[in-house]
Length: 206
Ligand code: PRP
Image (cartoon, rainbow, N blue to C red; front, side, top):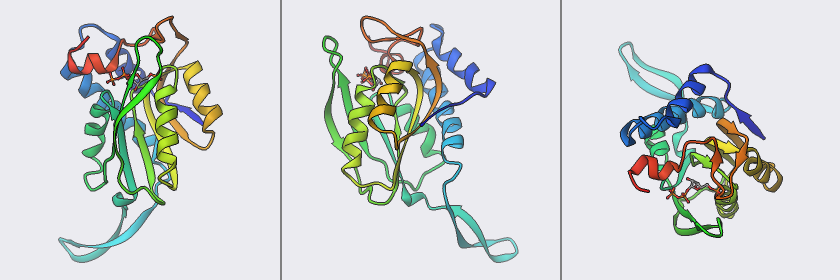
């Protein structure tokens, strides 16, 4: 199911990403902030367990998230600033890495590196700012499903209607939390109006 965040702050941050005056450092920082806002909504039902801690009044039990049951997996490169945003909240969670690159002619995604930790019965959170054709996310979900997670949540900043429909059709069990849905894909399979190539914007390449 697709959940698009409606908060005005989310819209504002996304539209700052579209500006050409947003340099790489600001771009990464906006992506990190948006990732935390997406996580806030997406992880609403995450279970907490009671843990005894030392407090100023002595030992007491309080509820905390079981961070080791959450696996964060960015799709490189552009997913990296999203991981930076989330590790400030989930410093104990294991991180996996999936590197994918879309061929510029065929627009097909190719996986060139993967290092996924144990996901059995865990909640996997995939991080990728862009869903254009949906090919990269589709392949990432298929690969991660082989690792038998309890569930998969995808956090994305901007997506096309077509790409998101592809994911919904292929993986109806995956919950997608997204900041912005733009209408179109152009002939080069770029989201329009979009924000350009997120990897290039974040890392000063072209
Ligand atoms: C971009 C983006 C997604 C993918 C989306 O990555 O970050 O991973 O394309 O396109 P799709 O939905 O059509 O598959 P890119 O291949 O440009 O690599 P990068 O992150 O290294 O820039």
